Structures are given as structure tokens and as C-alpha cells.
Length: 111
Length: 113
Image (cartoon, rainbow over all chains, first blue to last red; front, side):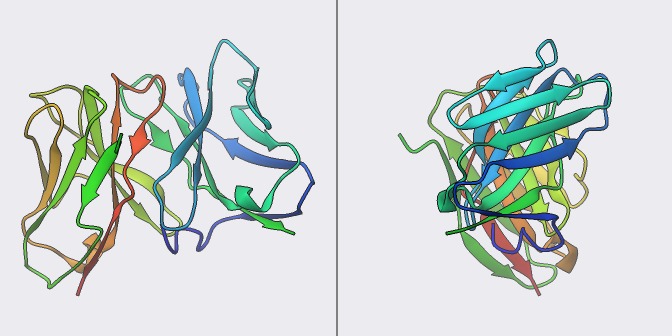
């Protein structure tokens, strides 16, 4: 939504660059992770997910990497476009029946 | 296919007033959720309903109540609004639990003065 970007870490890239957004998660018992994209004034939108028995998963222009040893998740966006400008959240399930969300990273893409 | 529909989109309340935020999904999902989003805080779970007829507290339930009216509808009620409840509220649904992720509504921006 509006103002969600305040106080967030920001990644600024040029159109056509590759972007890498990072997320540290807290619960070593988490077995399922999701990346969401949130554009201004809208609700979060599912991008890609990964289970803990995988360390990499690819989608269209996006790749998620999972490093369970250091509890780190990353989202790579290839050939970033202005339409990719948004806030990106990682989420983990932690063994419970709900998702816990990170605080988010704002991605700004300049033409 | 509308997905998850939230009403209203915007609301201003005076301290102490009550209101109900409405949420409906048309995807035949079993689980529904209410989150609030504040600047720099990410999304925090208020209440959820794993299936019709059940509700459970999330991380920040104080000051809220919920009703799972039927499989489609899950409402959030503020009995006596406080300025600390100024936030953007998102409803979400999932087929069952977390696998496959949630589908979110477009949010309700609530200001309590």
C-alpha cells in the first residue's frame, strides 16, 4: 500500500540490469518460503515459492535461491524492467499454518 | 473471477468508534487471514481461520475480533477504535494452509483520529 516503502532498504537499478534482493529468515524449522511483490496501493502478489528440500527454483525471469545453512533467501530478477519497481517481501511458514513476512525491500528501476 | 474482495477501501474513524471490515473470496478457499501493514513493520497477522467454523489469534489480535461467516466471508471488527489501529488491512485466502501461498485483497486503508 501507500507509504509501505518508508523505512525500507532500497535497491536502485537501471533497466536491463539483473537485481538481487536478499532476505534473512529466522526459523530454522521453516520448510516453505515465498516471495511476494507489492506495487503501490495494491495487495501483495505471489511471485515464486520454494520448499526447503530445494536450493534453487526458477520461474519466468525470476530465480529464488535458498541457503538453509545461513538461513538466507534471495530473489534474482533478470533484465529488470520499470514494471518491476515495487516492494518485495519474503515469507516463511516456520512449521505453523500461517506465513510470517519479512519487512520488505523496495526495488526502484530507472529507465 | 474477482479473487479476494475487501470493503471499504478507505475509512476514517474517530477514537472509540466501531466498524467491521468485510472480506469475501470466490475461489472456494478453506483458509482466510487478516493482516495489518504498517510502514517499516511488514505484514503482521491479526487473526486467521484455517477452515469454516474455526478462528485463531495471530501475532497482534488485541483490539480486534473476527467472524468466519461462511466459507466465503471473513470479517474483522474493531469494537473501539484507537489511533494505534491506523493501518492498511489486508485480507487473504488460501486453498488450505500456506502451501501455494495466499491470494490477497487490495486492502483497506483505515485512519483513526
